[in-house]
Image (cartoon, rainbow over all chains, first blue to last red; front, side):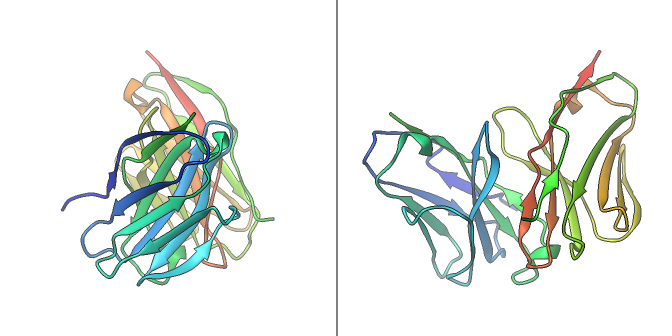
Length: 116
Length: 110
């Protein structure tokens, strides 16, 4: 079974630009979560999608948004990029749709975003 | 504010010894706990999940959960240099969200 895939793997943008990251979950997984990871802050939860609906949202500004398509693929968008948005963005998919407390999450390789 | 706390380390352990990693959590309603390993520059990979009090063993890894004391630990027997990584603890809280610890850096010295 193919793992979680994320594209692109590396991205360099300048302040003020916007960016869209893509995630394809493991086949059959319908829940997708997004995380931001920086050396100083660790793993920070952005949001979780299931069946094209945002189910949970972390404490990030509205510049961070996402969506999920009917095939469970998900995208996240960051508008008006700031230097502090430089981070590794991780996508994780889960086999169980609702009971996140029992969900084992499987991570993709991440997209490393650098904002200049 | 629900929290998962881990000692950031680094924890240095000689090769062949037992490495013991600990994690405490604040939400008494938490039902599930996970240990992930993350090598530098890579994404986290799931090592073990544990849902019930007691021990759960998988190869050289043993997860221990004590809900009364609100801690979960990971033991790595016969530690190898390839076990050197950051270990992340996560709990599924009572609101069905995953709360992550900041991770413990483990160094296995040959």
